[in-house]
Each structure stands twice: as C-alpha cells, then as structure tokens.
Amino acid sequence: MKVVKRSEIDTKSLLSVLITKDNAGAENIQVGIGRIQVNKSVPEKGFSKHPTEEICLILKGKVRVETPNRIEYLNKGDIVFMPKDEEHRNTNVGDREAELLWVTSPPTL
View (cartoon, helix red, strand yellow):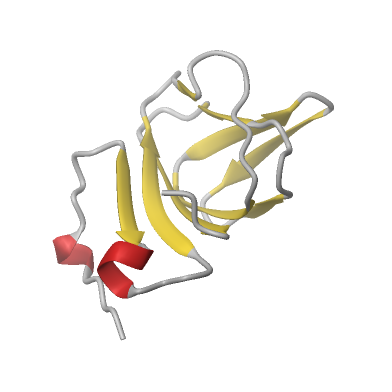
C-alpha cells in the first residue's frame, strides 16, 4: 500500500507525480497532480500526445480541453478520458490556478 497525504503533496510545483513504479511499485498506472496558471496552456504550444490512456479530474478551476477536432470546457468535478495517442492541450480559462488529478496507464514517467 502507498498512501500520499494531501499535506505531503508539493503544492508549489506545476507537476507533482504521486504514484509511480519507483515510489509505490505501480506497474500499470501512475498518478499525479498538475497545476495550470491563469491564461496558460499545457503544453504552451501545439498539442501533447503520449502512448497511454489518461483520465483527468478537475480539482479546481476552469479548463479548456482541446483536441484537433473538439473543444470542451471543464469545471471542478468534471472528468475527461483521453485515448492513447490523441493530441490534446489543457488551458486554464478561469480566474485562478487550475488543479488537475491525472491518471495514466501504462506509466510513462
């Protein structure tokens, strides 16, 4: 078992990887928290693409999720599933930092 208490999470970093093979022995999954500043995108230019399935839960803020063919606006509590190899970008369109819990399988970090 691996437990990560909220008080142990680095709230200053833009990316906090919480569960990995290295720290928890997770072989098929990884979990982290990402933060996006107001009017910023991840990635800054273009799209991100990776050979993993990804689930992202909006913990706070308002995020525009884009693929080359679709745009969706997500708020706290909304979840998005991104199939492997699908290009995507997340943009903070709210008025405060956005925070996202992400889960990918298989792990890549």
